Image (tube, rainbow, N blue to C red; front, side, top):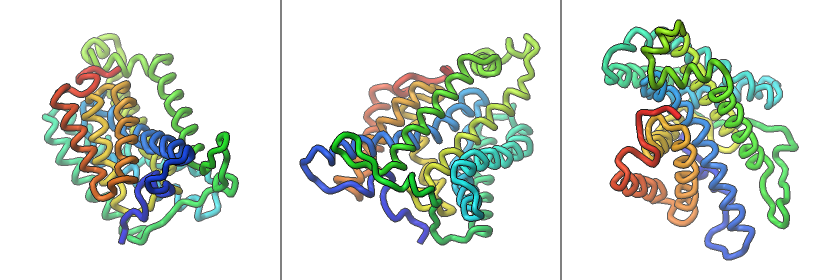
Length: 307
């Protein structure tokens, strides 16, 4: 009850075939899972990289985005409008959390934020159970997204291809924000030299708010995109949170480029694991993480620098 009906982005794969279609579909499924992990994990990484807060409620915000998307679509709203509105609703919830929970303890040790955001996670999970119940739900998509397209001779679900495109668009928009706008440059500077940013007259309090809001928006986008593929249920965020932390640790805390590499790597290993050794898929991911950390203790691209 409340568990995934099928492994993420691997439920349509065949078992141990040797034809080209299987391997192309598997590769695309690996990219699909990696894309979903990337959108969610990079929001968590941005919050840590700039605000120095590990938000344990991030997974619950992802689940909340899925529930908001489900509710809006159930009320007759277009899926694409739900994809735009739901992240904004999640952002609103996130801003309340940031102002009431995170901001008062910002200058205290990180342990305080871990304990408090864990409490927020438990609260949000309980609220989702109360409002939506525990029965699994799915977000309905427009008919054309439910069709199958052909990539050359290879049939592939159109929605999964749309997920890849949506991830690319989201990442391009994010990179533009961080690299080409005054706000984005201020955010990156605030990660490395916050004291100098304050001296220059930039409102660090506003930067913290914007960063947390941006992370929540990415979590909401991930939730809506996951809704048509995975079961929507109150505890879905806890499973995703674990995978996101694996992505962050392997890639290097605070490194956006590391998160991209790590998300694709975890998506590849996890999808193949679900296909060939279903019961031990996550074990393989953890073993991979242990091996990488034994060779590179700070992750693939290191720690402490938001880039």
